[in-house]
Length: 269
Image (cartoon, rainbow, N blue to C red; front, side):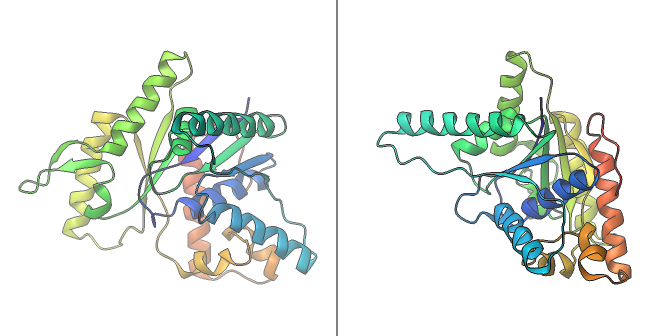
């Protein structure tokens, strides 16, 4: 069966789609067939990135590895129960179709609580939760005591993940590997950075996730989107030497892929 990687949280602007496309391309370039599902059915950032990639390859006559795409739609059923049943069937069919040809399925969730996102979290073998390295984004995972800055309890999102993990356990499935990705980390040892780090270490022990470094803030990610490219495609697409910033960003991606500890994967990136 395909290994399902879900990029999820309930906040926008944390790098879910960028991370999803780079994880997808890293696996593709390592020789593994990958399918993608974009559950943000309004913005479709991941799916549009993949479509831009197809257009770039056709326009430039370059053969880059591309994922298999599964398109979903919001139910138009009249009742909530009918809509949920339709979306459950649609999601199940998409997973089943991709599972026939793909070793990995990467699912990008919206920055909101939806039925599709809930189902994706329950299906995840690996759950990646990107967050900006700030006290604001820390609220995605935990409730903080305003006086001490210590963790007072899990957030609504963390509780939803816990419920999804419990559902997997009751079905006899292997536990989800939950990875929290700290994006846009400052190089400065600021007070807030230490507070975020301390709170995350405490929370990781309490609700069971692994903490890994993510991507620094780089303009190159925004530049690559319109062409459908990733850091791993620059030399093939542009036929040029990489800048020091791009080399550093590629190393961040390699570190992330190793930290994910995906089963039986040999990376060649």
